[in-house]
Length: 298
Length: 265
Image 1 (cartoon, chains in turn red, orange):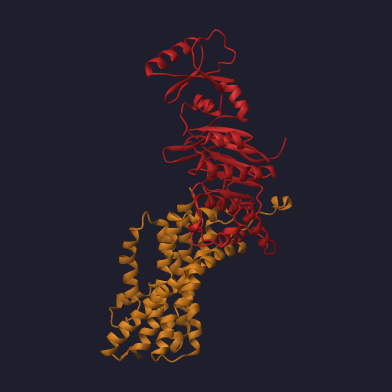
Image 2: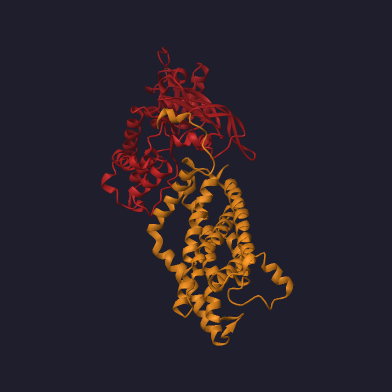
């Protein structure tokens, strides 16, 4: 078995009466991309902060790149790159100056600094904007710079907290390509997201979080097969009709979930003699998510 | 990067490379705002110097054995040190923590809160040491005689500035909101600033007030600067420098404690 880049066992983090992370176990094997999927408030960002010792766990064991946290966190951080959910670039500095500062903070040798900055500029496609001040960049460029800044020292482990939140679909695609390239270079990635599609596309394994704990983990397609079957029957209609369908499916032992204007009947694969009309579609991670957590996701 | 480094020795506290990283960030940022910062740090004490120098100077020509312009020119060095350390530390720390979230970014890198606070204080202290000399240079233009002892003034400003920087960082660390600073400015900084002996000597104050003045680090800064310029007072000045150093070390630890509470959940 491959070494674990991240290993959490029974991790608990409380803020007063609120338990943000509740006995969480998490394994991230080296060289893989793991997605933490969950709605806002599921404990994803707190988990990210625990991994950089910006939050200290109340209980449990944490290891990052073989270092015990929080005692040896600084060594771990030296080999991690963190992309925060909220942009914290120095906005009055240029693109290149931002990278220069982090080349120092990440202790890149003087002789390698220039090359590291050039590589980061290329990777983020910001070579032409190196002298632009950050406050003159578009949202997508800022996010690319935020990622490049985290990768300037070629970390073994990248922690991405909601890397595409609040961006246009097209910009999101660009960033996915960037993250995918990183993954193919062998960098281990832990990414939190509340976008189902993002997790499905990028993650080798997904950990579904709800109220601070893991409710399921596995490869996206396996999770779908295991929990939602192959196909889903989606029935549209007025509320009264939907209630009827729900009762009928329930009586037939089928699991259902409500969406805004329809009802989804899960696991209809090869169910013969099932008479309800509707649209058949492949089951997806969202079905799994709603089924397991009882929560809708944005 | 290299796997061999991965299991290397445990990194120490207050590492040079961590301090350097934070200092580089400040220096690079400074290149984008040095004009406004130099302007305010220069103009403010100069206005005090001119206002008091000419205002009071027209009524009193000599005070405490000095020409009034000389007295005020050396006294406002401490004012300049305070203004370029405590205030930027308070507001800058709060802005970087609350609005720019800069500290979140830095602490995700191999930098601990202790190193972050120390580097920030070192940077502000250095600026305060330099900007603190401005009133003295202006006073030279208005007739203060240059002396060799003046070379010690940036160092005195640095030591005092380090303490006031840590003081400002502590306040920012404990403050819940920007508005909290009003209490500190009104109740702490303004009295300390007026009762430091910058603008008038404290000799005529009641005995208890003079004893209390010895608890005011700014007062020691004022006296040390005057003695550096006009002549040292032996062991007493050493004691004053020691008092400034103790003040600095004490608030340094407090600042680290305050910011750890704020930055690490």
